[in-house]
Image (cartoon, rainbow over all chains, first blue to last red):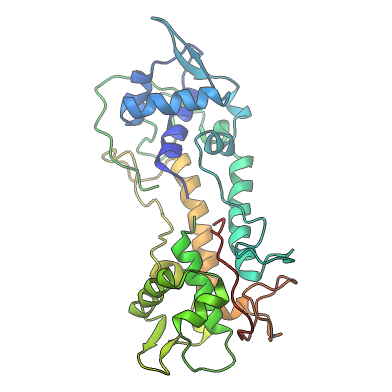
Length: 163
Length: 163
């Protein structure tokens, strides 16, 4: 359901939402925190900036930051910006003329997509932060997300996500 | 979420579940009913037969039939047989050692997959038939699925599904 690009975009956005201050983070810094190759991540960050999810600032102290508050950015916003479309079925995939309602098969498939879309629209980055702070990784051993991200050792190599 | 192969496999299985009698249907006959190219469909039908969803019979009166009752075949069975895996997240995609619980992001994504998996496991082919019968297409204009499928005119060309 979620592409690798979207998975990485979500990690990046959460990493930025979890920063202690509002200063921009470099692509390298974010890549280390979220275990994603920096070359791939740069494309994703620019994609998110084009969609108004991030701001991008050039220069020595430049980098990327959230363009809005974490509570104003939904998971669906990030999925859409990173080109994961939740494929709703709005008309008969068989192309039957005069067919104005979905049959029970396509209604079932569409209902599942609608449900996921609703959940992702109702969940913001702020909902995924736990307010405890201080841990280094996106995921810590207790399964919580950090509210603050600091880099204190080289990143471990990225492994492909299962999503 | 659902690949084209799985969408076509679902259409084929429903087409067979909706037949008036238990005699096998040829790949051509099914392809016409469900608006899928016959070459592609043949591979899918063989795939479903390998997974024990269909029986396959050679010869002039041969073809494909359901291997079980429609009430015994779930949508998840067909998705699995047609190689759509609902990608559950069972461990941290970042590969962090000692990380035994999912963080809130990956828990959210996994919960959505779990919900879809549960729905598809609980829905059988029989649940998608309406018991009214007699219509030609997988989808009729009232949005119901047929309980009986007969071919009375050449099929219209297939159009790619939106799923």
